[in-house]
Image (cartoon, rainbow, N blue to C red; front, side, top):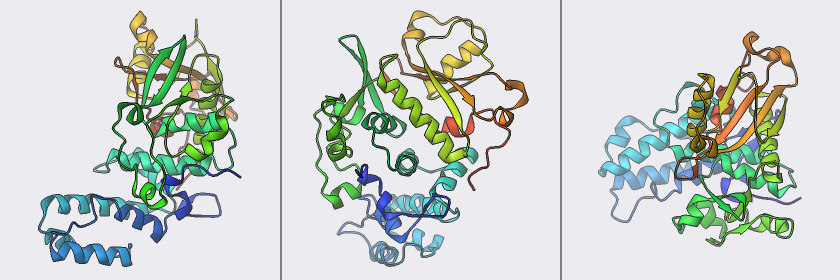
Length: 335
């Protein structure tokens, strides 16, 4: 079986009987190995002592006084954020449950990078055994910002950091630890190069064709369905659409901030101008396999999912909207 996304650290985690990811000491140590936390040579003795103690026992309780005694202000701030995140993970039975608690009750001071990393490793778990590079490349959109372009009539998305040249440093400490090669060359994923995905999955250097009616849009729909099933234990049917005319717009979920603005306009009965229409990247119709779980107001009605790019052609997907925005009677399947 082909492995992929080694940089997310999935191999450092355990799994419970239900298939959820369980935090291990090794996983926590990978976070402590981040360059923001590793003490420089000039760090004070308090910071160096704390770092050594946590690398020996990453679950060790740390008092506010210990943090306050660190001489460097930036180091104090970094440790407060990191330890709050660690404690949040340890309060929950699984990584999945910790993620759901964050998106349902407020992320607080949790850095967006950490939230994306949780999505990364949860998707790696949910897609374990997947042998379709198109599905895996589509899944990268959940945790990596994309740049959209039109090339020879095709709508393509490529990793924003890769094409902007800002990803010259390792994506995570694990990349350095594993010696994974970095690259800024971009190829468009197709039948001829699909088999190369496995060796380059941590380089994020394949563009995806998201032209309506083609494989990429269908692949993203499969990821959405798997994400919902894994996190919420809800089976759905999802259908990619090229356009919608005369539909009853009872409920929608915007998969990013721009799509939410477009959805709000449609909800309020407004007509979309050409510019707003052009920013829609993908559109789906979702139905619950068990209609009885839906809120009464949407019983039997489809839910529309909208994905859109910003005016400057950036795509920032918000997968948390799928975890908190569906009209179901209960959303506590994962605890």
